[in-house]
Length: 365
Image (cartoon, rainbow, N blue to C red):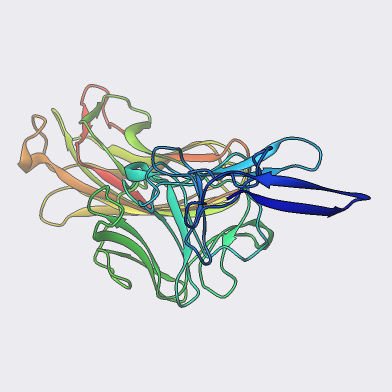
């Protein structure tokens, strides 16, 4: 039966007659222009507290927020809204009050970007959620939890990574985000860091760096003046004063006759404040050796030890290959052209080649 609605107010009165049939249960009544009983399939409720926008066969729900001057900002639901990883799409950036977000996940499906979340203890976790790898390039701003021990990129405090005493920096055995850690850095005690196999406090790991310089191919010279051994040159950092100690292990042999060979150091670019060096050269394989030391304060070639081997022979003859060691500490000044030093050798006879063997090395620390 038609219903008559009387409108009163606004300086007058009138009426709208509704002629439509019964309303669909739990539907929202919309103005229809000519009647007051219009409903739409995309607007329903649960009958008590929930307003639903969108429907299967109609389209994903869209919430529109009009601006006071222009435009409409929208929030659009995903087609498969029952899958929690499918995102709601915002047409505009979203701003929230400081310290109100406790969990944030970026990305979709198997290509999710990263998650930022706080644990029950107040710690912050930042992690790749699916396929591993680098989760973000964070160059500015702050991600931190004031009540937890982890701070990342907190420039005003001069902190770029701050871990709690029982936290470690881990690497997994595969590229999966949840791979079991097999390598890590962790705190052992004040001023002590452990290189480990995955567990906090582990010291079972090893470090491979370019601080271990190596001779990768036999180095042979007939020069009677000091020449740098290829692979055994160290350059101090530029524009900062620094101190470095070194320990060099050499294996050498003479070619055709015993000669007084020279073992030394070449300093270049900016002279060291001081380079204190000492060493020994074995002249046979039963313990006989020559030892000496030197102090270097200029950019020059310096003889440290002169020694004559007890035997000679074709390159690679084990019985004629002897050991030598050179130690030292360099104090380098701050300079844009940094101090550089090289382990160097010279033969006692220009007609008699001197060889430093592949596998000789120098550790700089």
